[in-house]
Length: 278
Image (cartoon, rainbow, N blue to C red; front, side):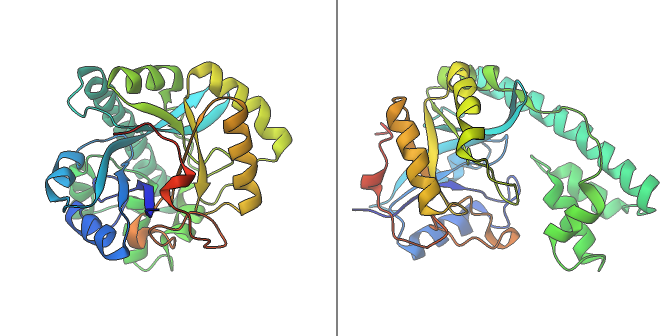
């Protein structure tokens, strides 16, 4: 009967907290099982492992930004070996793809909005391991151009066409497995700020993702109603998929509290998931 949260982000990707601050938050929140799942990087997992106090279970993870046919999706990898060569090579490719996307967005801000980032801002962006829209949006908020990063992204960045810079989901799944991990489809009904899929819309996508090789669903999620969670659990059980869950915590970069696994804030413990992670 332990609290868990298997979807957390540090400032190695788009979270606000350092790995040390993240671990401290986990401890203070009473969570006993957690995973660090930064976007397209594993840079923080070894650091986190060294900071884990007795009585808390840590799972090395990653969240890969993917595309499977016409499905834009995020695939979580649990229990991965961060030193695996295939995973390292894929992450290195991801850095190049994100750099292309970053440069496209920087040019878009200048050409469309007449917003030119200064050297200090550019140096900060280019120094990061994994850059996403949130980082640019935070700069715009600091400049006073928007009240928060969500509205900044919507106004200044969402219409910027960056092309497909996502991983091939089939490659991502195979790579996670080669790295000793379990590939799980993150927030499969839709993530932060996205319109949720209906049951009728979801089933065809689930069939495609199963064919791709996913082994589980993130059924418990901070933005899902319990009715949505129960639907996802039934799909997982029907298709012999693992059941996982996480808040998608980003510190102050999102409003979701750590450990929140549904919209109703109903307490969920680790007996509700079935991931085979020792």
